[in-house]
Length: 250
Image (cartoon, rainbow, N blue to C red; front, side):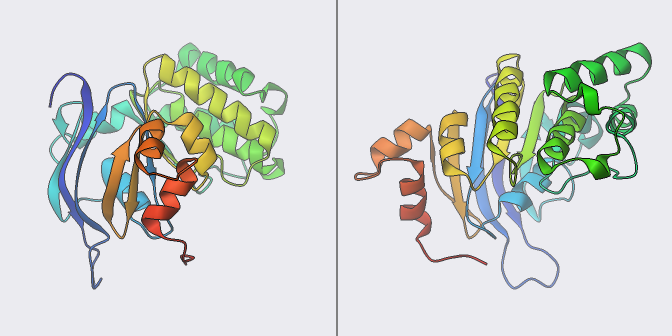
């Protein structure tokens, strides 16, 4: 792994118990430091499985993953300290307030005392949630929950941030706030790995995109280069549909 690479995936394969085929099939790719890397694909393409392996949630069947120069199967404790995870499903306790949720997650990442209080207050203000900090999460709108969910994954200033559909189901205003601050995080040095079904958002947000389907990576390049290389494509969605076809997925 060279110094400009922060994630290196070699021949990654995953087959779940009792499955008849691999969920991820011999994937190899790299992610550069400070990149916003989009992993895009239809439902069931292998996106979430790949992210789950990169986060250390379960091991690959074969192949290897190196993150920040460390083998994920040998140095998982180190890797968990430098990554942040924002799952698609809201990972918050509805019976706790926003501040209580963030205090809980901050302690999980080893933060405490004045440093933790400062970071909670800082991010609540940045994402326009200060006035709601003492309200129960059960009373929050979908957009507010998404913003708190994001803060929970970035409190410890991770080197790498994994985002699984971070803006799904939110209003335009919340989406704009989330994307704006993710871009600021990236400029400050955080590498972002992102999945989404929103092609226009991905085209404007990502610096590099890989399209995955049926467990295999079909192509990868900057959004502009992908559009240029597929004649007749006006945008990333056109490229996506050309490669994955138009038949609906379950």
